[in-house]
Image (cartoon, rainbow, N blue to C red; front, side, top):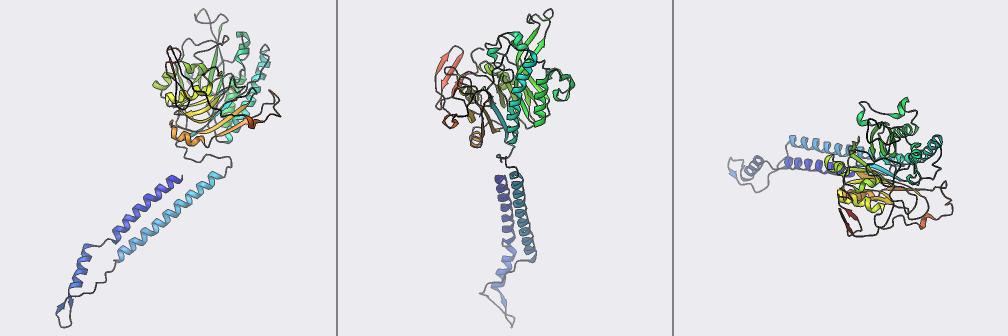
Length: 461
C-alpha cells in the first residue's frame, strides 16, 4: 500500500511540476515587448531615447488563475490520497489477528499441519473405526479454525492422518472398516457437495470434511481412503474380494465442493491398498488465481504423475500429503526443499509429527524455505505452520515471507504425558545433513546450502 501511494504521489507531483514550468516559462512575445520597452522610451518632445531600467513584466491574469486551479487540485489530490491510505490502514488494523499487510495480488495464505496420529485397536468394528476417525477430525477442525484466524485460504493435512497408521492395518478387511466410497468429480456433470446432500449420510467422514471446508470458507486438502466396488467377471484387474482400496487425497473448495480425488500412484509397504491400474495428474484452479496439483508421499520419487503436472498442466503449487520416514540421507524436509529447488515451484508439505523418525513439514517456494519444522524428539508434537505464499514461485518474496510466518506448537497429552517437558530445549530448526549419492536412474547432489537435488527421473522412469 505504501509503495503504491508513494508512486502515485511522485507521478502526480511530476505532472504538476511540469505544468507550473509551462505557466511561468517566458513567452517570446513578452520578451520582445519587454526588450522594445527597454530600448525605446518616448520623451515629452516626441523624441525617443534608450531606457536603461528593466521593464516591469506582469504575469497575465489567465496564467495566475490556472496556477491557483492546479495548486488547489494538487492539494486536494494529496489530501485525498492520504485520507484513503489512513482509512485503509485503520480498517486493516481493526483485526488484531491480521499480521499480513502486503497486497494480496502477489500472495495467498497457506497452512500445513504436522500431526501426530494416535494409536488405535485396528481390529475393531466399523462403528469404533468411525469414532476413531472422528476424533482425528476433531483435532483437524481445531487446527483449521486456528489457521483461519490468521486468514489461511488453504490447509494441507498429512497422509493417513484420518485413518491412522498404515503399518497397523495389515489386512484388507481391517482397512475396509475405515474407507468410504468417494465419487469422482471428473465423471459428474454437477457439483458434489457432501455437506449439503443427504446421499452422503452413510459416509460421515466425507460429509464432515466437506462441512469443515464450507463452514470455515477454506480449501481443505486431506488424505483419506477410497473404496470402489468392482466385478471380477467384468474387470480382470478387480481384486479377489471385489473391491479396490485406494490411498486417496481429496480437495474441497470453500463452499464444500469436492474438487478432485487422486489415488496414490506408487504405494510402498501398503499391502491393504491397491495401486491404480491407470493414474492421471490431478489439479485445480483456485479462486485466487493459483493452479494447484497434488500427489502423495512416495509419488515424489517417480517421474509420473509429477512430470505431467509440471510440464503439461503448468501447476504453480504442489499440495503434498505424506507420512515420510527420515531414513539415512533422505529426510522429509530435504526432499521437500529439493523438489522445490529442482522444479522452481512451490510446495505445501504436511507430514506426520509423531517423532524424529517420521516428521518434517513445511512451505517452500523456488527452493527457498518459507517455513519448515521437524520434531527431533521421541515425543509426539503437533505443529501448525501458516505463511504468505507467493502466487508465482519467487525466492525473493519467500525470504521476505519467511520472516512473517507463524508457527504454533500443540501439546498432545492424549498421546503422552509431557506436562514437565521443556519445549525450549528442542531445536525445531535443526539443520539437515548434506550428502552425495549417485545411482542407477538417480542423481542426488550436495549443494552449497545442504540441499538434496534429485533429477526428475526419480527411482524409476
